[in-house]
Image 1 (cartoon, rainbow, N blue to C red):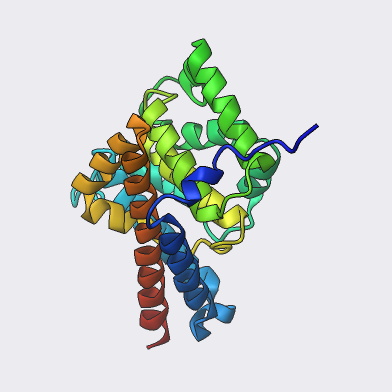
Image 2: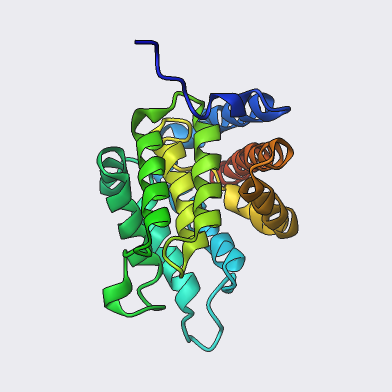
Length: 249
């Protein structure tokens, strides 16, 4: 029997994709090697997690911070719970992701949407056949079904969850958290120091347009999404360096 082909391999050959991923990896490496992050990375990771949560909240229609009157917001609260679960990298949720990604996704949704839906809807994707099939395919990919670089895999999972919207609530927060989980679990950003969410928030129009391009499945649409995702990882690494510099001053 011949070797089974990698279903995502052609994506790496699309224009700009390999370069964007390589540059992101180099930038994240520099952030991890900053003297502040050699030992003090837990504080940097905590700050990165908060910034990621706030930006992800905005992208899902929530606020950047809680109102001054002390009232809460369910979207931001959920994004912060998700960020706390991922903070610092090698936590329990990363281990679950490596073994059982669908279980990890369900946990992410339960954290993100606990103030948005009834308890019996938490962690439960839609029951239609297409949703279940596509989630299973995604789980197969992230547990060894592809050998593409982590930056590409993170972008694909992110784009697929934005397209599929499997839970019907907090899908954006979950999709961005899955992207972060992949970069952590793969070792691309092992401590979760990068903050690509800020780049996506600042370029929200481009982000949404590129997500639609990914959903279209055209080569140009896929390339635009993958390149934007790589650029966001690169920008998130610059944010990580800025955090480290601020903490060392």
